[in-house]
Length: 506
Picture 1: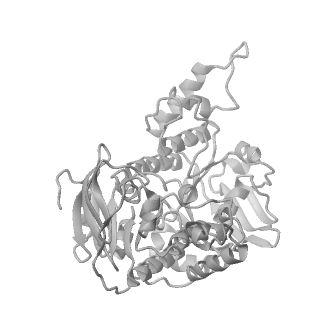
Picture 2 (picture 1 turned 90 degrees about the horizontal axis):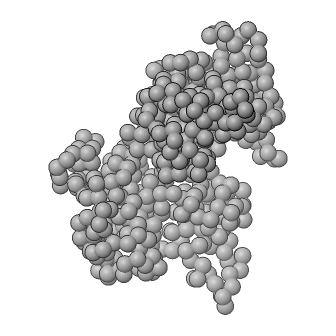
Picture 3 (picture 1 turned 120 degrees about the vertical axis):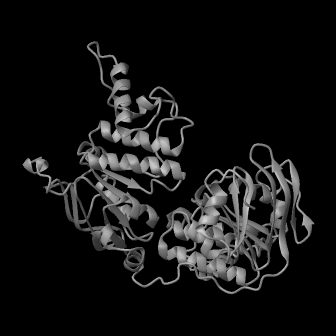
């Protein structure tokens, strides 16, 4: 490196007019990013905007086809991730990849353990440095414990500690908070600010605007593989960023359509599972969207999984149109018209290495079969109906599900269950990990389904989503329902009090 390294005015990293194609598919048309030292820089855009491709070029996973790439003023061209790391760049992904059977310290120093005079690994020196790094970051993690069983939040801190031990000057955090609780997010933000104050440059990628405005100094917007604009965070607003991201005004993020609310469809009475949830009772009517709110760990997902028959419960009843569903029997729930779109759509909602058509028709394959066989033409015809209705963006119905963006994967999972003509739709975190434009599309679809008479139970950790979409809000805390509010009564203060207060407020 030249003497520009010591110049604080020289950007830590510069990408200008970067182009990247994969065959005929152009992933980046003109990607640009200028990252200053001692700053936290948000990188935002819809799924497919080119953010991930830009990051992978910086990380050495991809090589750019054209454009400029400079690190502290000097041109660089990484051929591998090792070169990127050696140059002082670290990427912290949403789901870290640590060795579970090794200790925290061993993971931090994997492949570069310090040695003593006789060539033996100096474990004392490793442990001491790990301890000093955690103390610097203000976090408490035992350097000697195995990483197996650690929370995602702790695993991310370990990845950050690894980056610091390598003296990384640029850290890229890609959707780091998607699986974290509120307390864990605050701890991560404190660590990020500490790194910024040390003069390091951070990139923060997130779909959550509240986090972007709380943490970041500057924001860059990308759209359709191109750079759109960069501005100080203090000089913009959510509406401005949404407009730049989608190329149009999104005046109504929560398009709530008028729906005729009818009779009870789903009735849950006295559901109990020791140590998980207790005395859960509520109903969902046709045409109604019931929002299930609460903090992470409140027991919401466990309740809906029990309703669907995936998880057990000890006592209580679940009825659909007056008929009691047997426990621990998802097939029986499906037969009575219950559909569950799970929180983890990648692992539980679809088969990523199978075609879009197969994923969409997965819940109705018995209906499509003739003499025990399913013709591809019949499968494609059935899948095409729902792919079209939900506007699934895919090159072809025979493309693998894993090649789709997060928002389109969510649409495929929805299409799978809607194809089964359900009476009750349970949807867990409907817009987690998808961009703002697609969020509006999913909200519009959910509202349309309610208008058509579907009974919808929606779990969401995003309070604006709950308040914007639900006709009625149930709040859970520590496995119990602690509040119930009609749409007109559901305020952020009331819902958060019910989610956090020690006494019941139902």
